[in-house]
Image (cartoon, rainbow, N blue to C red; front, side, top):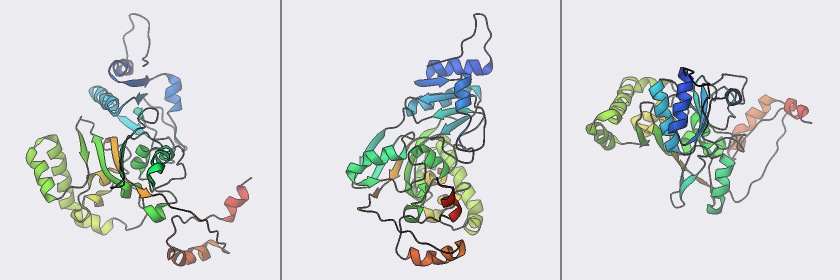
Length: 319
């Protein structure tokens, strides 16, 4: 742990006090030094925002305590994945939680159900390597699969080239263990009317959240059905359509893609797919992009795992 050091008699500033309290209470690393803040001010995008500080929790419980301290100081928090996002999602004037150093465990694997419970900091390739002996893998595969984390993939609803076969990350999420900023910790997933009634009858903060979400659905269901575009790779905005009754009121799926703006994800239960027995690459050449697009329906009849377009410009730029 580290904290800001000042001469004896110095009155700590707000952020100095925050850093010191985090260092006292959080199991993990607390980094408020200029170098760490500069290092975490960027992701793979052109955006730059210097954070308040950085916490590297050793466990999800350490992250829970970090959020509690930040709540006491009324400062925002931001969960960071692998730092590979392209639109500034990992940058903010907040206390950044970096899960990728310690919270990298696969908690359990159910080979019969083809599911795994994991911590958010595990990298996709690392997870798939550990799953390989079971003949299973995570379906979505972004181009940054060496570095991107499962938590980051949940945050931005990643898909990658294999979306053709396996869809987006939202299609692979069964349940999430989440933490709200006000301290409520719970597992969420799909819920039928009976389950929703039971939750609301228990009262408390959890019931209030579910009641509020049901009110949103009751008020805007027709608008959501009408205006949410039915396209395979829709990854922008909140997945309010996952809360529709016909979609099982799936709160975990509704939170995928919310970019740390709604909850902090502590653990995830992920649906897995069989590792393909073999793979083959077919390269097709076309005179122009329009001709390539016209050929897509015929290609889809063969159920490709991935489908990518590469133009001559990209090839010419390769060394």
